[in-house]
Length: 238
Image (cartoon, rainbow, N blue to C red; front, side):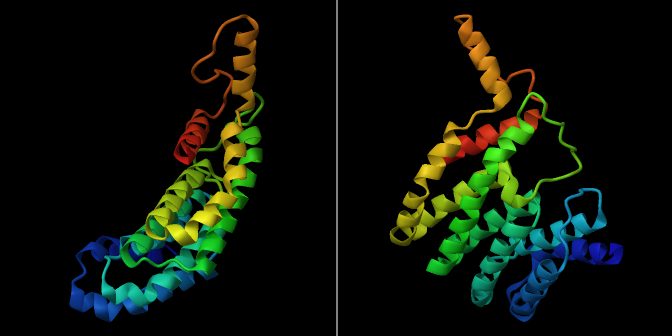
């Protein structure tokens, strides 16, 4: 695995310098291989593990592949691969997958009803998971999160924020197709916007009971970065 990571790291550094003749010879074969490795391998959620770093490197390579007509035939498989990782991998890879989807849509205007439906299904699952995530991480008795352990992509404030930006790209390039799907999720959007950290809610209500107004983050929140990510996701949804 360490050897694989070394090779993948070298490839990641080289990918930005690939010339057109080389890309036509290499990229059509490389992309399916990398996607297959990611699909068949086990996701890792520990930043210190070699497996985590290896998979992270492969996802970054796919994200950094230069836009050209050479990879146009690979656009759909790449899109499907990103959706698979959004459902099954960790949040750091999920964030990069969202950015790659935006890149694919903008570069090749590649969006089908099937892809849209699958993406919206993942988005709705993330919406539903966020409700429990707010309680688990932003209550007064929440356990501090381990900085070396990352959350699943489908249970992440950060990924939710990035998925809202993907929706923006869908509406910009395929508005007639995307608009009905986006409108159907509006009730869930408003539910997420109405969510409040339990610790924050108590601090606010305590101050209001005294005739005062609470601003800022409650000192009882054990995971300030998660709180910041949650608020950022709500802002991007708006």
